Image (tube, rainbow, N blue to C red):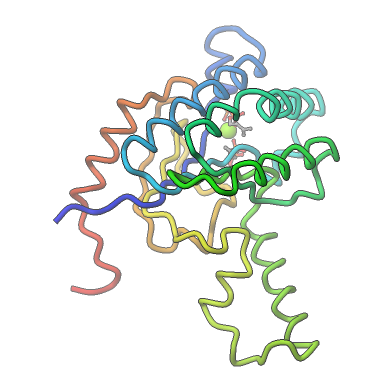
Length: 233
Ligand code: IPE
Ligand code: IPE
Ligand code: MG
């Protein structure tokens, strides 16, 4: 039996090195990387993926030089205004996860508008992890549940894996089946720590701007033959 790929998560890494290899500023790598996003989102949908989560900017990425952060935010503005439209037309619902209060007001407004405009789209869901860190997400969930217990809205015994999951940014979304990290590093960098408990991991040396739908297809085929045991024999 082949495994079904319902939810794919990707750490899009390697933009800076892609630019460096070409003697270009890091921003050029981010620009090229952003172009790949739309292609991969469409390819994932064609492969039957229902949920795609892309790690676009981590809470730790705020510590990069201000010029790079600004360039990334401007790229995001451009995407929110124009490029995500194509996904909208492809019947893809767009959802953002992460620390929204860290982002500029105009960006937040566009994010909320795009979520509203695509809320009824049914073919697939794209989750964009922006200013996202898994530990802050888990802390927020714990605080939300503690508050509910404190106010009497919930009993302590009602806190279980299910209720905890629904307090995370990924509420209503099944856990990822597959995690891909491009760019050669083999670490999670604070991405979906709770949700990836039983995901199958794939690491590729390909830098994100060079990642293609053909490579995605190869990884999906490999995943389909992996044995997922979930602790059983
Ligand atoms: C990933 O590429 C994009 C972001 C983290 C925003 P990097 O910018 O981390 O590229 P490398 O890892 O330096 O090559
Ligand atoms: C992870 O990449 C974050 C994103 C791809 C958005 P980083 O390049 O920030 O991760 P580290 O610093 O190498 O762990
Ligand atoms: Mg990196």
